[in-house]
Image (cartoon, rainbow, N blue to C red):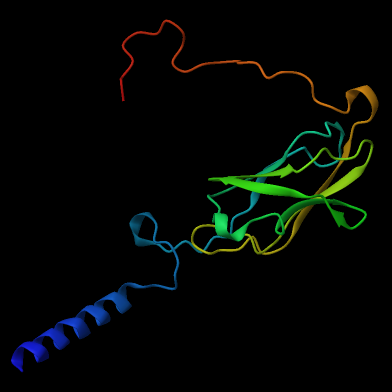
Length: 166
């Protein structure tokens, strides 16, 4: 009987301790501070009002902090024209989200890219309001990006010595 009572008391204390450790489901940062700052968008590609954008490219945004991947998909980051969204998928890599159209966009068309205000950082802070920008795709011979990427730098440099193995 004492063993059952003691086990129950230990479980009750553990529950109280765990409950007191949970703080509003927000991340605790350095110095014990709670992250209450909403993310914002730093950069976007293509740029707002860009013209001559390749029809076979991707659209991306970079945020001020890491984004919770579960809060962003093709219904919360999309490209549309005339009220119709292009089919595609979204890939999140830390602070960057990329919309990859399922097929090439139409030539010579103005598109609106939208990131919904419900996209949130890892602490649950939402962007707050929808973010939109527009761009126009290229037409004719310049519509498709046919230039292969090139390496512009490497790290470590070629022939480098004394480079740590880890």
